[in-house]
Length: 343
Image (cartoon, rainbow, N blue to C red; front, side, top):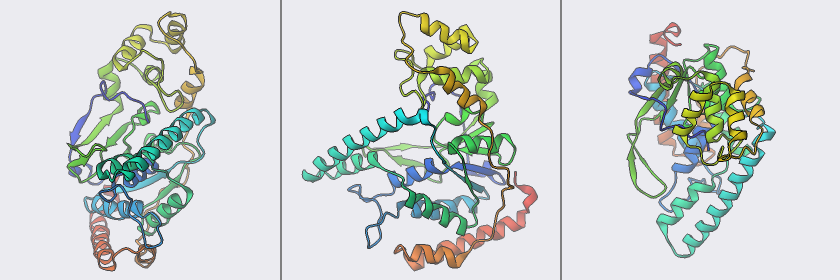
């Protein structure tokens, strides 16, 4: 779900060329979920090999990353580890929503409602261990570093950025700001339009969100931003405090300033009900530390392994060869720029 603060967060539209020479840590689950949701047939069926195994994630990882590498962007994928226990409620909510979507999909299928099938099929996507392992294997064969987080991938991507191991974190979720990511990149893609679940198309732009700029324009500090996120709802307290939207939450944190005073106001107010442990959630965002002490190393592309993986999943050999040719081009461009040009 992610924290819903898009209405009040300042953003700057940028071009891919603005990211040339930068190293970006990508929230892997977030990216893979997008591929599984969007790379589908018209009736919502994901791409599959002859054995019925899903390949949408492999297609997205292979072709999109090649395009980004050709733009001179260095990528690091950060994978989720074990989810915190306090996320159980949100995971249960998501599973219930997926089951509802699955039932709606079956009804749409019985009516031969192609648009409905596509819409609902996107809503019960699941990332399992097989998909995760296949994704890591392909990325590493492409020479793209993989980082395994102990906990949340977005938190680890943020920690890498805060430790200056990467220039920015890339995710569709604003949660990385709660962890204090210096820079957040959203919509990291070459596409200019995106199809929604309703079948309509919307324009999309790459967005750069800078942490200090967000704080300055909202007139708050990081502690208050965390409290604001908790008020509107996080993955650890879905829905937040009922009756409090983004703008109202901002007014509350600006007025009461300190975490204890903010939530004392909520507890004493007759308008609101506090039915979660705000301190536990606050500490989670405030105290996350980077667990990846190893240096991030960019290795050569293992073309034979890439080809073996994709041919084994029924990808077109000619398209693989074309992609590998472009990967070689990206590698050569990277050598010409020199490692010192990347941050």
